[in-house]
Length: 268
Image 1 (tube, rainbow, N blue to C red):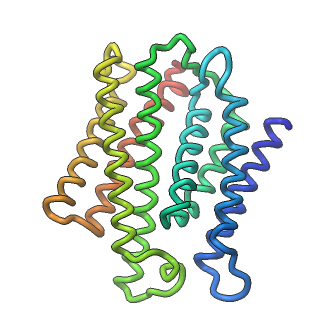
Image 2 (spheres, rainbow, N blue to C red):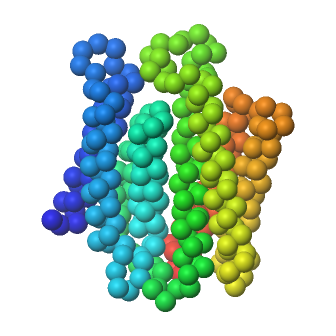
Image 3 (cartoon, rainbow, N blue to C red):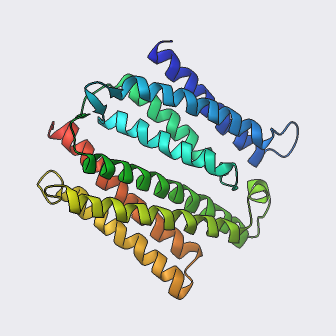
C-alpha cells in the first residue's frame, strides 16, 4: 500500500472516530453511536498511523525527526495515550479535538517531506532524553485539551446550561481530577527530560538550544507552581485552566517553535 493511500485511510479513520465522538456528545435524537465504536475506529487509525511512522521515520540512516515527521510522531504518542487511557478512564472526549489534529499532522507529513536524522550512532542518553521529552509533551498536550473541555464545561454550568454535550461528560470534579493526574505525570516526565538533558548533553545552553531550554524550564516552573498551588491552596477551575494552557503554550514554543526556526529559517 502506498504511503499516500495509507495516510488517506488513517486520516479517514481519525476523522470518522472524531465524528462518532461528536455525535455521541452533541446529538439529542436519532441514532447515537456507542462509545466503543469511536474507540475501535480510533485504534484502527492508530495502527495505520504506526505503519506510516515506521515507513517514513525509522530507517537504517536513523530516525527522521524533521519538523512534520516529529509532529506526526508526537500526535501518534498523544493519540496512543488517549486511546489506551480511554479503556479505563472517561477521557475519550478529548478525541473531539485531538483526532482531527492528528489527521492534520498526517496530511502535512505526507505532503511535506524533509530530513533531519537522529543517527543510529547517537548516544543512548540523547535517545532517552528525546523519548522522555516526547512523552512529557504528549501527556501535557492531553492535559491542555482536558483543560479546554473543562473550561467549556465550567462555562456551561456557571451560566446554568447543563444540557447539550455537557450532560454526557463526567462530573466537574472528575474532570479536574483527571486534569491534575495528567499534569502530575507530565510534570514528572518533563523533570526527567530536563535532568537527562542537563546531565548528559554537552551544552543545553548552546546557541541553537538556548531558547528551547529556557522556555522548557519556564514551562516546568509553571506546571510545578500549578501543582504546588493545587496542593497548598486548592487551586482549581479557571486558575488551573489558565496555568495549564500557559505552560502548554511555552512547551509548544520550546519544541516546535524552536524547531521551526532552526529548520525553516536558519536551515539547520
